[in-house]
Length: 301
Image 1 (tube, one colour):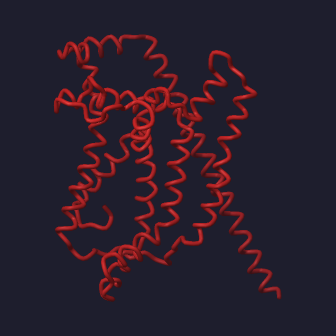
Image 2 (cartoon, helix red, strand yellow):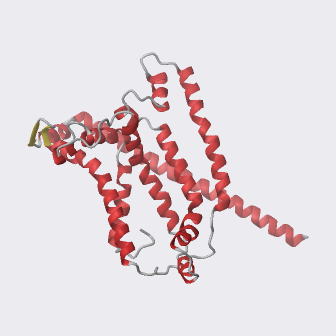
Image 3 (tube, one colour):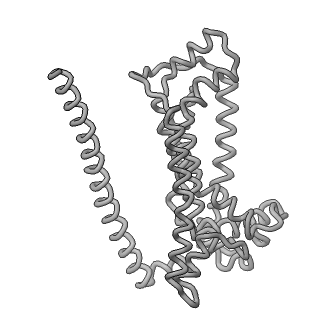
């Protein structure tokens, strides 16, 4: 997206479409997959046959986790791309580098640190999530469902749940070590020049089609969420109706819990952002003070 000459409006659409799944709770992913790829799903209504034989268990969770973690990985990589200096692409072409070497030197290597951070972030999102395995996991148990069973199951045991929670912390040690190792590969430019890349209509069109197909497939999974509320009884009575939506909106309990959720979310956003901001200011101030002290000591000597 960043290394093409596609229209800005198209790039903005790609960005919004890639981030759309972040707006939905993870338990929704499982039910969206069921109602899209299941035996009575949306795809059967469209193409007449089931695309996947069994969507419950490992493969269903894998698909759900992939959709769930894609926006986070996109956000990290998209942000880093903004700080890559495009003039090195021009320099690489002038030096006669092959397309593979050009891609490796100007894109892959500067992004190694971000690739590692994105993979670790996606790993932990999938490792700790409960909503997707709860909705589509079937008999395939994961550590998050085991933790829920131990703490909030039929016979809760906080002691055993604490042991499971400790096991969930083990990968954190490895991830910190990986991030520390790949930090040495991070590239920092003194200045980034905003230049236009050499025009390649074939490359731009191929990447545009590829991005569109991937995101269309992604959004198709969630299309059923916007269709089912207006169907009387999916998939038996495929008749348009507004009764279901009207009954839901008239429910006093729904409005109450909706307001509660908004209140908690707003307070979390405000105070969480303020705490993070002041923590960053404090860290920067400490680093600045260390630099000033080192300069003063050097002048003293």
